Image (cartoon, rainbow, N blue to C red; front, side, top):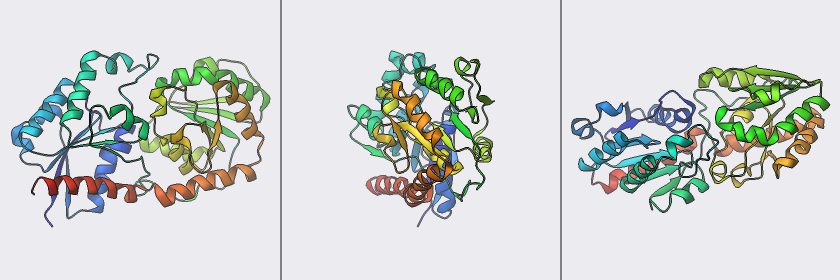
Length: 340
């Protein structure tokens, strides 16, 4: 079998979205199929007809700029199959999100629609994103995020657990945290034997409150050191507050994958994406605090089976070595259709 040469274009090759949707899965695929897949990462300024005629498939993660449209056009002119991937519902970014001014821009929206119309395959992470993009493409395939067990084996977590209740995220979640801030601070007051940990961004409107509980904050880290830190914390609970918006209903459950790797039980909203084994749910922001307090009361012997149920499901269904087979099916199908 001849080698499939894939040129790949990522907005930021080293960030978390690339880890789960771009460089991460594609490089894992190359390692799985060393004799049949070759990946080459390009930057927009280096894409022209001479680069495109030298590849079999062009992959673009989260294309939205004018130069991305140009890359897509050149790719189609060279009769090379174009695959694009979106892990956020960029048609419904809410105004509280720091990226709203970018993705809400009319020209950016036009660019996204143009690329979608040209793409031979559109890969998304959730059914909600597929629904939002369906008016602009009939070639959408849902491939969930998965755990790269080659980079970080999905082994049993640390046995010793500490009373740490963890949130992880960035400033893009300010609205989500504001909605449940009272529940978090109340829980910190009631459960002074717990530490409340914030990873990646510190919500000052929570941590500046004086409570009997302790707050810990960790700055943003690169993906792999962050995963090592999360695992090393050996916490018991990780919670995922999300405001009920179309954008958030499209969000994938990466936080659950990471929490399960670290051995934590998860509290998340009752959205379809979070209907997974072991996850505890809250129904509305005003009910978040009660749900969190209920979990904080559980002894570890009752929390651990929840974490174990999530881990068992991920091991069986969401390891990258299995999920990547779906990507390879898409690539093979496109090449078969191109007459290669």
